[in-house]
Image (cartoon, one colour):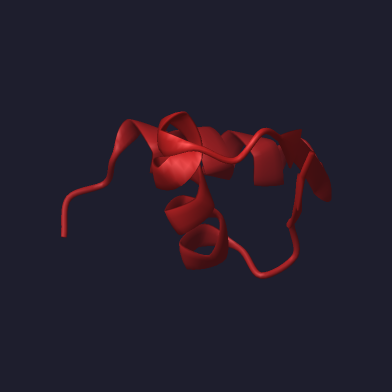
Length: 48
């Protein structure tokens, strides 16, 4: 599987020791919602 831009974004989030991400759920965050658990199980995504 090819690495997406969103995977690279999550890798950068992990590299900077971010443990919580806040966002509004919707079509614009589907890729992020998919990439977070694929790249790290240590990041909590809080839907606001």
